[in-house]
Length: 407
Image (cartoon, rainbow, N blue to C red; front, side, top):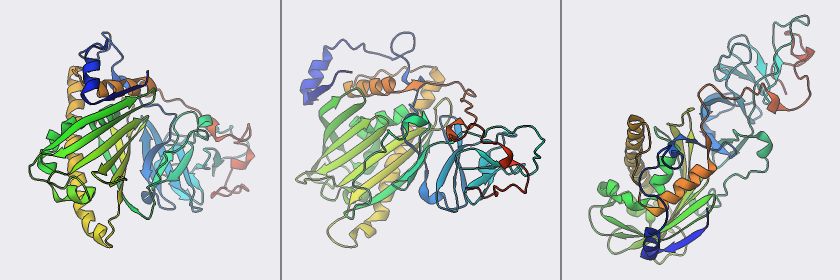
């Protein structure tokens, strides 16, 4: 996509004469239906909150229909394995952590963190050669989240995690969100980037007037800058507390910059006369099912602390309630969009906003075709690496030199 840089009303006039076809984006009559495009797995995606994964605990999670068992060994290291035992396909998330291995609850097969089998308690040396193991996923912990790399493991080391300098800064306090939303992830990108939906939140923020100052786009990103003015109406107290110096009534105005940089989104709000954001949001939407009609939204809201000590602690419950209410209203809207898509069997949206048409192109171009249910590749533990015959005599019997706790 060619990079664009448009400002205010001028860009709308310029786009009015563009060759972009208006109307629905329907398979067979135009570009591929975006709601049938899958999330690209070659990125780091959060799949759990770190605090949920205590030592010795297993947590089931998923990415696009691939079930994943996360567990933290007694050493504190987190591992991510395909959530099935190579023996009878029973979920490993039902199993037991022993040291840094995960033992299946059914026949007690034990797996190392690389997915290779470390012990089959009842196997004799004369028995048949056991399977190689199960797939393991690259995993990292950052920002209080557990990230996995569900794509090509060879690309994991060269793919950076998101850079969030405000997280952990002494000047900021972070509010973490983790919610399931029953919609395709693209609806979430559109919702946050298109601030023309403030009427939806009129009962929380009053009458807000968003003016698109400019937007730019590239092959993997779209960035929009809005000017927000308060035009009256009752405002939730948490809105003013969140923005500190802005959106708290009167004639105050704020500049909000929102960016989709595939597959993540960021939002920064800078109050009028301020030189840095009052808060910054990082968010991503992780598809859970094969058809990707449900996603899990993870968000980190990094709020600058006021200069008066203790004020943030007092304001925290109000800010939390305000943001939860806004999110709930957004969720109702995007889930209604998803239901309409399912009822109609196609995307009949009549989108006219050039910004959203561009972000759809970014999501479409960087996504991947949806994989049919049940067609997840069976890698049989090959991503675990190591020797060519990892399941040798070391896995047999209870007297094996390789203890159940593994290495």
